[in-house]
Image (tube, rainbow, N blue to C red; front, side, top):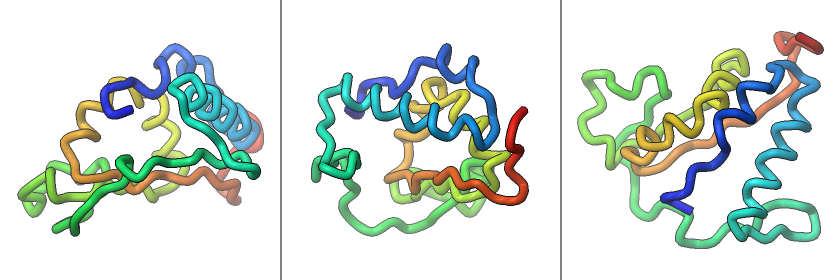
Length: 124
């Protein structure tokens, strides 16, 4: 999967960025993973292969916006973290294909989660 773009940007351009769109995101990711040959367990979670996981210990961790901070010396030993407000996460999904080369510079990615919180708009 490393060389395969995850989702065409055209899908994301049409997506709303609100709580109602979370099931749409899940559906798109599920369909895309299935098209790449990923299998799913009885609870509909993807069956991840061991070679998809990082090996070794990271030296640093940085958010996407701080990835080029002076204290980040070696992207290959740094985890890229996406835990932040959904207001910042949704735009990352909009450009996921364009940013895959950036993500691949890093040792690994701490994946974002989408949660419904008081700051999440119900509808846009």
